[in-house]
Length: 277
Image (tube, helix red, strand yellow):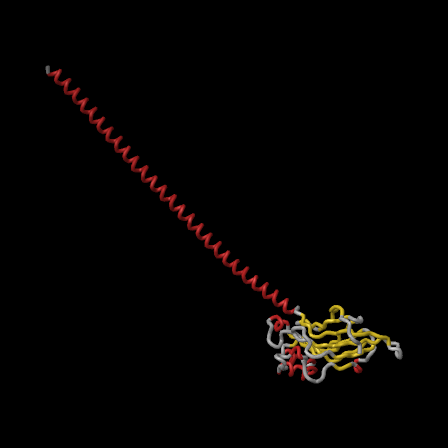
């Protein structure tokens, strides 16, 4: 009987031990499973945080690149605007330098052969013009020897910067018509155009010659020979100039003064019929 009791105790002990083992195993598994789940969430959260940080860094870099690009674009835009202004300024300056002022007209009224000398004689009408191309006084007639007509003048040319800026009194070259003669005449025998009344009315402001112009014409040859005095007045050149044209009967010729340069003579169409006496 006692042996049987002992056997039962052994069995019970074994069963209890097995239950304890099972219980411990189940708890360990549950703990491991819980730990794994917790760890997985933490790992996932860490990875998400790292990804967010990488994205934030990438966005920051993109932002910096965009800011740099915008700054570069702004700089280029400013440069383009400046260059455009420079181009416009240079274009305006170039246009002003090339402006031609119509300052006089030569009309070839008649041409005849002189029986005594055997020379061709040319009857010229000379008319000074204002800025609108209108006569400032009635035409003056001169008969010269030959068909090549010379127009002798004093020319004053200003520094380009004054012409480019349309500076008052210096926005264009100045001319004073001195004399007119033919190819077979000596300059000393030429017909005088300057009546001692100062510069042409085409350069008078409201019909009044400016003090600046008076000073230039009064000291013309002094200025022409004094480089410092010329520079002080903004003058780059002051000298005489004789332009000529081989004329044809019945034609008119324009006398043009370029703002930055001297005189030229160009054809200006046919004359209407007129009396020669």
